[in-house]
Image (cartoon, rainbow, N blue to C red; front, side):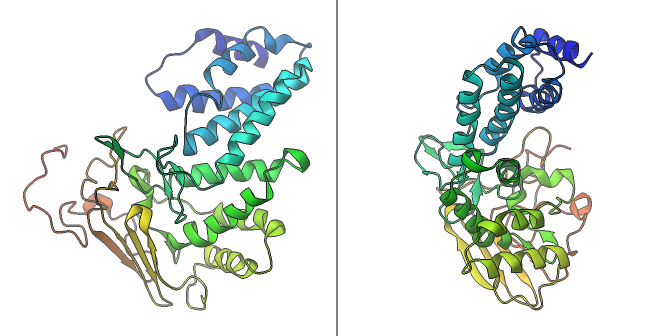
Length: 336
């Protein structure tokens, strides 16, 4: 029945309006299902309908970047494993290696003017995605704690489940250690994740950081003795939400690629985001963050206990958020 369902899914060639639901959400469920049943069905059965469809519609050569490319690489790994187990054809090993290569590249610093247009891990260890185009120039959009965490969770699934020649390169994993300790770890304080790097995901409620501590465990066997203290400190901060004995994540840090400033002390944290000709604020899309026009336009948040802004969005005056100097009349783009 599961095999029949996969063939039904593939034969429908769904053209629903949501690109993500069609080529990521549904495709990932289907690829995982194929991997689970590939040994239980007759040889080559997956190659009749399902594999040709998913190879064509969800693969790493489709021009995606950052978190979207990570989703495609993960899905391609699943269906290539299923294809190999069911057909024993060498081409599926090549697809598997291609997904690994794509994921490996996502661990490195992106070129701000290259084919990624700056989408991915930046040289300051902030993460950008959906960079809007202003004329001929792409403006970097901070997205570390939304698309960025999707990117990282996909990468860590490779490290956790693959080994030997099928694992990521050592220098790629080393760069991930820097991403957590020099980047992601500065976007959370006392259990609160900064609003700025969440983008339109702030409309989805408080984002969970429950998986971040497990990422430090995955990286620890690959971590040098020089970098272990920072990784251990990050794990402790994530698990206890206690900043009072923090001696590593402290001081001011400028994430210059995204015009983003952080200042940590043992008593409070300050986050500030500006925009310039090189950067963007916070996007609106898919009905999310419809009142976030001024987020990133000089806005700042100060937290000590971590719960100062908990569930504040429904009662906030979105034209008087902290730090900004804006009009006192209704912004015409806001829904009534």
